[in-house]
Every structure is written in C-alpha cells, then in structure tokens.
Image 1 (cartoon, helix red, strand yellow):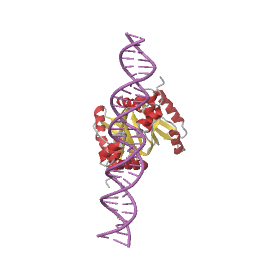
Image 2 (cartoon, rainbow over the protein chains, first blue to last red):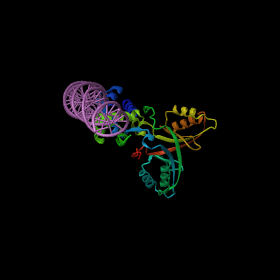
Image 3 (tube, chains in turn orange, brown, cyan, red):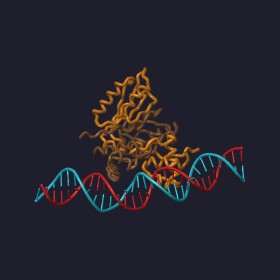
Image 4 (tube, chains in turn red, cyan, purple, brown):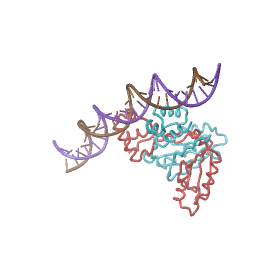
Length: 152
Length: 152
DNA sequence: GGCTCAGGTCGATCGTGTCCACGGAGAGTG
DNA sequence: CACTCTCCGTGGACACGATCGACCTGAGCC
C-alpha cells in the first residue's frame, strides 16, 4: 500500500469506470502493472466493489429515513442483526455506542411503505423501540474524501 | 425508463465495471444499444457516478461517527450547509425533520481527529449544538436494494 | 559475486468501445 | 390504406484497451 496504490484507489473512488490504460497514464506505470496492482487491491479487500451511484428518486426510492433501534435487555444482537439483513430497504446498518444499539439508513418509495417498515422493525424479536427521523433532502451522500498517506 | 433501463441500472449498481458487451448479453441487446441507453441514463441524471467502494480501515478512516446538528434560531441554513461542505470528513449530509436540522455521517482516522471535528462543528456559525454517536462497527453500508418497476 | 524474488516493461493477441450507415415498428396524417 | 417521420435498434469496421507471456532490473541474502 504505497503512494501509487493510494492514487489508484482515489482515482477509482472518483470514477470506477476508468480504463486500466487511463489509470496507467495517471500514475505513470504501464497498463499491466496497474492491472496487477488493482487486482491485488481487490483481492486484498481494500476495494470491495464497484457501484453505480443512482439518483434514488429516479428509481422510486424517494423517502429516506434514519432509524435508531433500542434492543430489549434480553435480546440476542446477532439475531436482531440477521433479521435486519433480511430487510432489503435497510441500505446501511451501523452498530452504535449508546442507548440505541443500531442506526439504520432505509430507503422506501412512499411514507406508507415507511410506516410498514417501522411496524416490521418494532415487531422484530429483540427490538424494544425505534426512533425514526425522516430526511427531507439528501444534500450529499458518500462523498469520497481525499486520502492521506499513513504517514509512516 | 423501461424494464431494460432498470436492469442496466441494477446491473451497474452491482458491478460498475461490467463491460458494455457483458451488459448487452445480460439484457439481450447489442452493445451499441446498451452504450446509448447507459449514456442517456448518465446524462439524464439517473446514474450520477461510478465509484469504487473501499474498506475504510484500509485507507486510514477507521472511525465513523453520526452527528446530529441543532441550529441557532437565527441561523442561515444555506450558510451552515456551505460550511459543512467545506469539511471533507463529512461524507454524507441529510437535512432532517425534527429538532436536529442536519444529520452528518463523518469518517476520520482517530478519536482525536473526531474531537477536532466536533469542536470545529460547534464553532461553525449557526450551529447551536451537536450530538455525536460513534459507530462501533459498520455492518453494511449502501447495500443496493432490488429495484421495482414504477408499476405504471 | 551470483541466486532469487518482486515487480516492472514490452510486444502480441484478442475482445471491446464506439462510430456509422442502414432497417423495421409504430404513430400521425391525407 | 399508404406514406412518412421518428425512434430505436442492428451489423460492420476499426482503433483502442485488456491481458498474457517473455524478458529485464534492482534489492536482499548466502
């Protein structure tokens, strides 16, 4: 994980569809060398996936909610987590410090669907209560931040 | 925005580096047709970007925090937003219903950096108070959910 | 020095991106 | 109904990119 790897990661965070040839030009190596480095970044788990970022409204997911979850005192956290994993509307799931064990980001098409989702969450074994905040608008999301060398 | 477009979006959400030829095979069109459709999805704002998804720990961003912001009664929301935009650590910014006007997702390398970030946020004109929750672990993030046709 | 290995370059081959001319289906019109 | 226009697709052509194998070079180690 040297400077060149970091540049590659940064370039691919900005545009995942850059060709190896283009990446090679940007970092000053040959295309095969870049190909091999990127392959190692992928198999080493640094690069997890390449995803198209989509305008949620355009695909019928106009309602974004952030939901805090309080667990029962006797809840099995792994079971709760597994139940959440089955719910496709939950796009992100953070295990938090604090009273609320989880914070979920969910996206649905309508408020009615959000209501159903909240009901489903409250019925989930191990969940004591939920607290839902609605995002009126998403100013930005998953903006890649400039990377710094580990300053070894 | 028909079924084929939706399939393309879904395929690219799963893997943004699929070739046009491969996409064409999956949806049963020719490569040039797919090329044109994807181009329209991009210029029409449905596809906003292609990004490599990176393991945050691997690039020195091991600390994730979710921060609620309460504004002063006399705050100018646009100014506050602009101030947030200047802070690279803020990866996502939602404008929320409720007492807390904003919810931010921030990522930093260390708790010390998080402390600095919180201080900076509290000093930002228009910000009355902040409430920070630390994510102990990210179970998953930005998982693409299966799309449904607009059911016209 | 000479071995070995990691990681690079170069060249060749084959698949892909992308431009272009052409063609067929469906809507609107006399 | 026939004509035409438009949209959206196809197929061919060609340059470019991906990717493999052979070879090169410098660092570390006997």
